[in-house]
Image: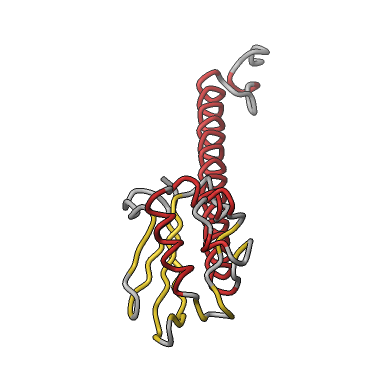
Length: 171
């Protein structure tokens, strides 16, 4: 006897509703995993770029401060922070002018926001410390919650080796 045209013998290779639903579920599960993975990868990449930028800014600010006299070069004699374009503490490379160091610390403690602006880091916070020969600090002590970059440089103030530490951080 011949099998009817819609019998199981003739149904080879045809998908049933549960098969289609299972395949669709697996497809969307893989799609969701891939989306989550790419979002995490993108976030990690953005954080890495932000971190490198913070490190770059910190190193550049520290290098400028210890290698240049500032703009104008006699800014330490001014009583008005608005006369300062950019802070620099150097008499020559890594030899700091003690009057500039004291003036910088005073400006940073009295007018923190303008000092940040003159360091060209208004979007970040900073803390600068001189330890060794001179024990001075200015800025805001960083909290442990955000990203921070720390640069230390060996400088000389009045013939005494001093460690200059600059911390730039996100608040």
